[in-house]
Amino acid sequence: MDSKTQQQFNDFYRNARSQIKDNSLVEQLIVVLFLSAMAKRETSLSQELATYIQVNNFDLMQVLTITRIAPTTDPANAASWDFVHETLTGKEDHVLVYQQFIGLLYDTKNQTTDTEVFAVLLEIEASDSKTGEYVTPIGVNQLLKQLLAVQAGMTILDPTSGSAGTLLTLGADYSDTQYYAQEINLRVASLARINAFLHGIDNEHFHLITGDTLATDQIDNLKVDLAVGVPPFSLSWNTQNVENDPRFAAGMAPKSKADMAFIQHMLYHLNECGRMAVILPMGVLFRGNSELRIREQLVEANLIDAIIGLPASLFINTGIPVAIIVLDKHKATEDILFIDAAQLGDREKRGQQVLTKTAIDKITDAYQARENVAAFAQVVSNDTIVENEFNLNIPRYVDTYVNKPQVDIVATKEKLDCLAVKLAALKAENEMLYGDGYSK
Image (cartoon, rainbow, N blue to C red):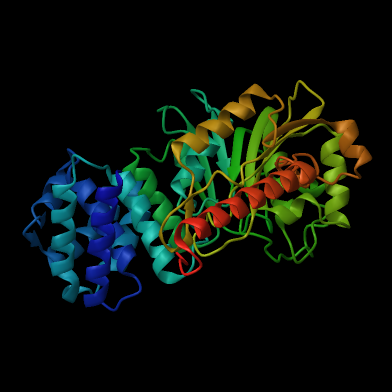
C-alpha cells in the first residue's frame, strides 16, 4: 500500500472515530473487511452475503441472520463467523460508517489488498488505543522474512502470534507452507483466523492454538523448520509448574522477565536443522544471574547465529531498544555476527520510526555476507564471547564511533594570526581613505 492510500484509510478512521465513540470500531471494520472478502468468493453463502454488502447498502439485520447460521454451513470458518456475529450485534447505528468503508475498499481496490488493509487497521488501532502489543510493524516483518529465507514446504511456528501478521508474512510466497500459531488472547486469536482467511490460507495449512505458551506446552511433539516471535517484552511469568519442563533445560528465566523462556521454548520446537528469529529488549543480551547462565549455554552449544540491533521507536507506543536474535541448530561457523542497525530508522510523524526497503536490504545483505563492515557489522568468535563473560551487548563488539579529523592547533593559530594582521592592514587603509568617522 502506498503512502497516499494509507493516508486515505487513516483519514477515514479519524473521521469515523469522531462520529462513533466506540473503542471496538477497528474490530468492526475488520469484520466488514472479512465480510467483503467473503462476499467475493464463489460459494452459495458468499453469493447470499453479497446481496446485503454493497457500496450503498449494508443490511445489518440480514448479515446477522446469515452469520448466525454460517458456522453450520461453513464449518472451516466457524470461529470467525462467531466473532463476526458477536462484533456486529447491536451496532445498528454504525451502518452508515460500514457503507462508507465498503466504498473506500472499492475505490482503492487497485491500490491495495485486503491483507494490507487489515495490517493498516491494526496499526491504526494500536496507535489510537496507546497499546501495540499485538502489532509488529510491516517493515520489521519484512526484515524477518528476508533473514529467515523461507523455502517451499516449510513449517513455521510463532508461539506469540498475535494477529499472525509476522507468521503469515514469512510464508506468503509459498502455498504449501504449514503455519503454527499460538495466542493467549481469544479476541486476538479471532483476528488471526480472519487474517489467515484474507491471505487465502485454509485450516489445513493454518493451525491455531489458544492458551498460555509458557505455562503448558500444547505442541509438545511438534518440530518445525523455522520459528519466529515477538513476545511481550520482559513479561512476568509463573515458573511454579515448569521447573522440570524439558523446554527450559538451559535454565529458568527470572519470574519478572520471561524473555529467555520464550527463546528456549522456540528453540525446543526446532528440528535438527531449524532456525529461528526472535525480537526482544536489549537487556536480555547482558543481564546477569539466570539469564547469564542461559546465554552461556547457548553460546557454548554454538546456537547463536546473529544479533541485530534495531532502531528505537519502531514499535508503536514504546521506544524500548530491541534486537533480533537469530539462532541456528546447524551452524557451520563458531562465531556470532553482530549488526548495529540502530541508525537505519526513517522517522515519520509523531516520532515513530520505520524500516525502509533500503534499510531492510542493507541489514539482509550484511547478514548474508557475514563480513566485517566498519561501524556496522562485526563477526566475533565464540572464544571472544567467552572471554567477555558471555556479554552480548552490541556496542561491545561494533564500534560505531566515527573519528573526527584532529584539529592542528598550532597551524590553526598561525592562520588566525595571519588573518589578524590582514584585518589590521585593511582597517588602516580604510582610515586613510575615509577617516575616523567611517564605521561600516
